[in-house]
Image (cartoon, rainbow, N blue to C red; front, side, top):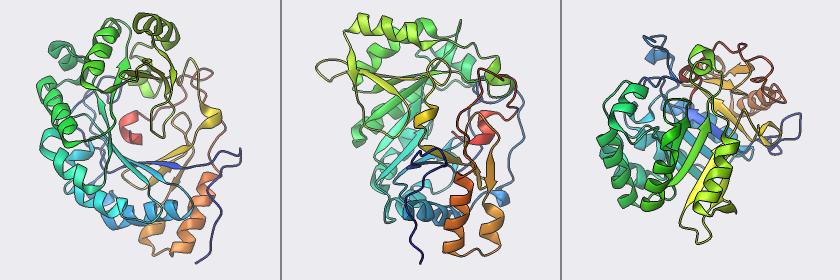
Length: 328
């Protein structure tokens, strides 16, 4: 088999992180992610099969991509997800396998996921107030999520990161409370700026995290630090290492020049940038019987389409595609 050099785009960025959506279904309807009444789901026959997913991940791994994150939709709605994780984590070259989830199904699946080779979790939690979380997600699920977090902690996942999308007039007053909760339980809090992806994203109440970063740094005595992971967050940590807060700032301080990731949607489309429409369809090639060498070459061609940066600031209305259709 032809040996390729590690994946690198035309701007010199090494692509060592693939976010892999296994379903576009979700049991929540978060206001910033999915429009009210959304029903534009892919048909299950158009989803990549586990065999097809394994082929794509193996191809990326052959070319030096070592970090993989399973996402959705809500990935725990995909039947036998832990079985898929076993297959993927066993592939040569895969050194880091993580999962993003909304936590509603986590208590039931945490033990099997831990045995499958997944070591790290990101759990979406935008409020610790049950009524407020229901308003954001359109589901009464706070108790389930908190229970799932404690079960996952007991199973030994490390780190467990709490993703909180900060929205003006919605939950920005809860940031300190969420930080204290995470510090108490040993979770890593990550604050995320909203992005103008579709009408839902543009109407979600953008908050600049830079002033909040300074406020939290002073409040908790935090210093610059690092937390294990492959994503774009910049971290503050407590001097004793007991607490960590990450900031994902695609708007106020974008990280395009160091972007190391692409996304694979459930229908086999590679999205090369969240803020652009650049994409490459792998499913037709997989179902036409493409060889492994040809698949590697196709992925390399796709990476050449990765743009230099998003244009959320310059053209906030440009992107019609919503987050739920792209993959987490």
